[in-house]
Image (cartoon, rainbow, N blue to C red; front, side, top):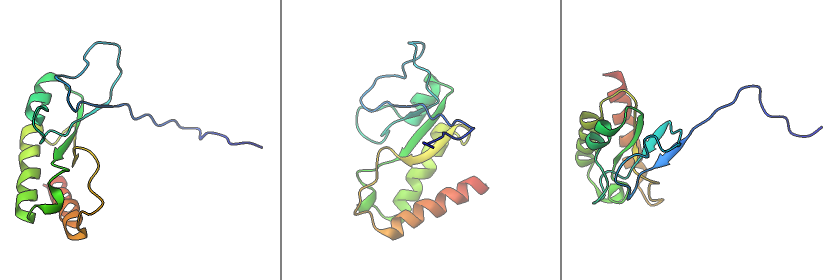
Length: 120
């Protein structure tokens, strides 16, 4: 017998807005989550995106600077992202992949800070 797919189906339609001006809107793209490296110059902020769409947003942490930032700076950036996007329909993540050299204590800080926001 060959591979059989599970009875349930999980879909995650994700659209990266890096370098884009705005979400695709009604251009035939059925998107569930918009992600963006919102801390990089030229990309829209969570607040700007929230005005453009009611879809789930993903981002808020500068993936390029995270390895060199202090923990208070990272926490402040995370708090700012939530303030801009709101807690509903928002996944607090690096804008893109985190650098492999990101120290473990920073990753723990991101995890713990995220959990504290979720419990608030």
